[in-house]
Image 1 (cartoon, rainbow, N blue to C red):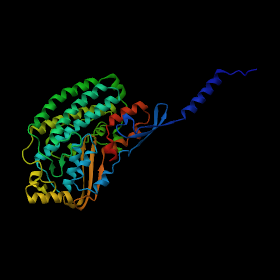
Image 2 (spheres, rainbow, N blue to C red):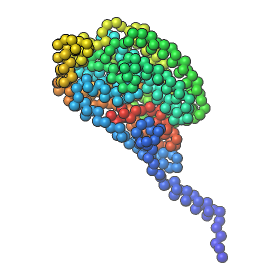
Image 3 (cartoon, rainbow, N blue to C red):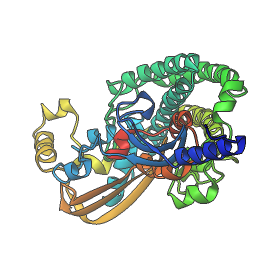
Image 4 (tube, one colour):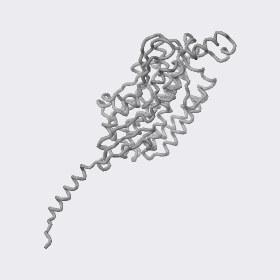
Length: 410
């Protein structure tokens, strides 16, 4: 005779089986070839269903050994390697490195050079934010925004090509100045871009900011508190979105930033939506700075007159004058002769504070060069902020952090 089983027994067994299932976690590798990890980042996840219970970022897939390479190159030869850090804003990375070495050499560049550096750094910020925003929107399903932002970014790349001769890895800045002066009529083209760009930015905001799907995907997702942002060493837009008004252009001005009128946007929630809004406003503020730089561009030299022994003389003089030929030979073979000492400088790059710590024992090659990559520090908060979110939310979180693995791994 079959034993009768009560409903209570069935419910008890069911609950016991459910509890056993809940204790089982699944391990999943997201990346390094996943399109939403923005390069070659791997996230080693532990999942309870679709909920993330543990997240370990695995970096190093793009490691090139830039810091060790710097010990075997002259100061000038390392400039192109800075293009490959944040390769979405190479113009800004060049400037940060050049200023660090100039401070080691106690070298001051003229006002025109400073204004050019501010101009190209802010154009690089707009370019980097456009790509970050376009990829962020596309990751969450808003493909149209990507087309808008990439169209504007291509216009910027055309301007970069006219200025530097290259679209992507520009290597425009030199220690003690910039490679060449601004082309005739180029500033007018930059102002024209600014006039046409702001209406497009308004259109992008209309597509996204109050979009129901976008808000559901970004609001109250990936929240970083002010305390966590400071504890984990976040900088740049990710730090300011959490309510910390730290901007090196205001707090530790360089390149004459103290002479420009602009605001520092600050968030309140610290979620993905705040990080989006903050970058949108940063692009508007960058346009303000660009317009001021174009309107008030000083006359004069685009390189420090004292820097003649640091970077190569003009080609026409090398081919016609013995002094310049000798100077070019010495700079290329031995590098610019720097005094002994050490210096640390960090600039407010699109991803955050990009720092260079240079140690010199004299001569034309650095004894040691350490790079503080903001993307590496910004990713350090992932193990904390990812827990409790869904796997699909991770895509949104990664897009909102806006990192570059070239700068992270170096």
